[in-house]
Length: 206
Image (cartoon, rainbow, N blue to C red; front, side, top):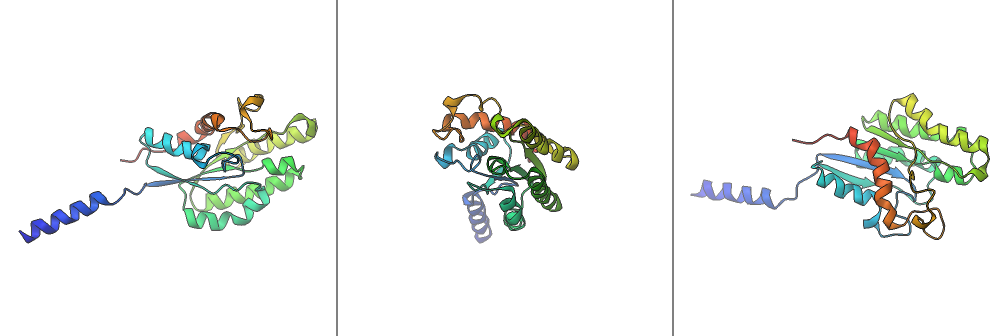
C-alpha cells in the first residue's frame, strides 16, 4: 500500500511539472526582432513560438534582440548570451543599424564573423538573416551591404534568409510612422521569411 502510494505521488508530481523544451532557438537581432513599437506577444519571435507548437516542434524561443543594437554591440555580448541560452539553433539578424548609420561594411562583416564563429563554437546551427538599405545610400554601398550577408553565409556554410523584410519593404502601410519598423499585422510575414531558412534546421523530437 505504501509503495503504491509513493508511486502515485511521483506520477502526480511528474504530471504537474511543466514539460521542458528539448531544444532552444536564440533570436539575436535588433529592434526589428525586439518587437519595437508593438506588444511583445505580437512580435515575430513570439509568433515563432506559437508556430513551433502547432508544428509539433519541441523548442523554446529565447529572444536576445535589443533595439538599436549594432553588429559591434552584438559581437561584444555574444559569448555571455550563448553561455546563458545554450542554443541549438541561432538566428542572427543584425546589421540594419550599421547600414542606417552608414558604418563601414567591412567592419560590420568582421563583427558578424565574430558572432558566427562564436556561435559555431558552441555547436549551434545558424541562420543568417540579410538586410538591404534604401537606394539613397548610393548604389555601391547598398550593393556591398546586401552582398555582405550572403558572403558570410557562403563562407560559413550556414542557412540564409536573403532579406528579413521581403514582401514588406515596399508596402508603407505595413510600417509604423517611422517607416522603419513593421506593424503588428506584418509580423507574420516577417516570420514567414525567417521560417524558410529556419525550418529545415529543426528536428521533431520523439
